[in-house]
Length: 293
Length: 173
Image (cartoon, rainbow over all chains, first blue to last red; front, side, top):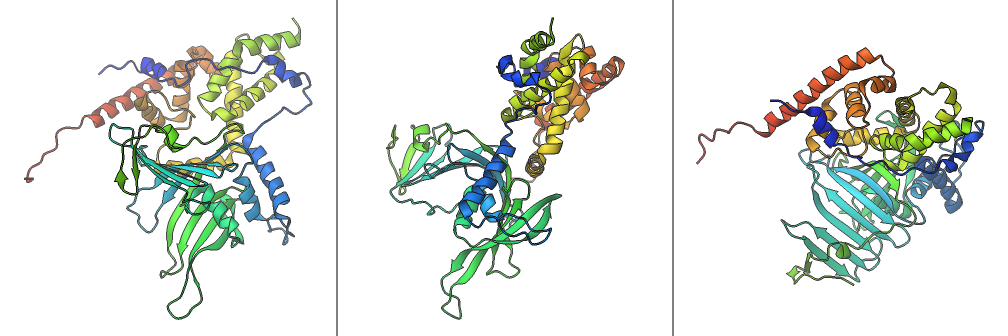
């Protein structure tokens, strides 16, 4: 078999047109070699903002360092600040696994958060890269969409039923924010995760109203969070069952990507994005609508 | 021609090509930073600039990207490893337009892949690629021959895997 591999390789070039570049005048600082080059590194910027916000928000964010091994900052607050931007949309990608069910394939999720509106969208992606579903929550509405065979998919809309927090996220930044706001997180120490230094936090995330032998609420679930010691992003979130023997990890999500999409971005409503999707509400199938208001 | 004028000519002629090179290998959000750093080096070492500056600039870009990844993006590497556990994600930012090519490239050694991409995507000649990689032209010719053969082998292997022989259904009703 003869394949012109170089021709096929050239045709696969993802960037065929030359991109626009900043005018050379914008590089005026180059005429002063001693001056450090201007950088707009997103990670550094986000980390600096995160720490500053943590300082401003917590009031008690700077804690006394307990010798040389303490974090010097309130890790939980810094991680909370690192997951939030005042304007625009934050995008996070993460993998979710069910350690108790090793046969279950991990799912990929992309999460978008818009703090100014409280909107959150999560896309669930299967092992072969196919979109399995999308869920969007905002104040006053929940919208869920799943693709259909050769069609525009199906849409479920619930209105005036969702307040912030009613839809419990299963992982990602929103889950961390929810746990942080519950004010149960405590710093448990410093660990190494895949060769990198992380801070370990944990807190009770679920309760059983009554125990079998008394009336006091019993903790049912604990969230263990590993926070990157460099940029304070929550890398790993583990949901531990406190009611089962051995306290197994039921669910683990690992952050694989994070970026801020800019102040001018916003999350589009799912119903506006898929206007031709068949509307399903309360199990009743209705005619497709072109717009949901 | 003054120093400034030389620099501006180099920038106007090659900045877009350098940015395209970066965009093929790094997230778009980092491209402007990397290009800025490449031309900062270019400004400082203007006297060392060869007559054909593009391969030299791409070599600087490769070094900047390498340093960038090693020194500043520890967390990204960590995440990439986590993602790699579930999928064999390639180490360049946008996926190639041909998924088969993407898979085949991912199976090649990094040095082979970089050489092929310099020629097929950046449009360099083997001699220019040698400058970009910092090796001799003769070495590039040998490596290129070998890399082409490996890529062809990977593509042929894919075709074999995509058209498996019919499965025997004996015993089924």
